[in-house]
Amino acid sequence: MLFSGFFSGALILAMLAQTNTTSCVLVAPINSPFSATIRDPFRQPSCERCAGNRGIEYNTQPGTPISAGANGTISFYGQVGGTKHLVIKTTAGRRLTYGSIASTNLRLGAAVLAGQIIGATGATLYFGVRETSLLNNQYTDIYATVYVDPAKYLNGNSQVSSRAILVSGAGVGIGSVDRGSAC
Image (cartoon, rainbow, N blue to C red):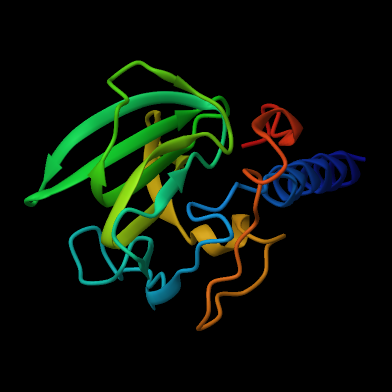
């Protein structure tokens, strides 16, 4: 009985985790008719300070519009390592980072909608996704943000390809992009 209850609870938690991951489809950072190629795909670092790529880097035409991936608020805008970055904290708590941006009119605390134009690119665009993860230790629960592969949320969870295949929401209007609180 105890094993059966534990197994059922674990199965329900696994299904919930899977549902949350697959139900979130972000609006791509670059929408058609613009094109972008993947310059450097996500590469999970082996440790917190180790080399890797914590997002996807795209080659873009300078001035290409950048679209918000989900509903949220601007939680950071400023320079990091000499390049401009903008971070959206989504309604589900993810942090979407846009790096190497050329310009934006948005400021800290501004509300954004999925598909809304949030800025313009330089010659490249970095796009990263951070999620909150629970790390258990024997004394207390510790919450940490971890970088995840953004490709799993773009284009219906397809794998990264050498050519960016992006989900468009801008062509049909912001109102038709329904992200709810899943992202």
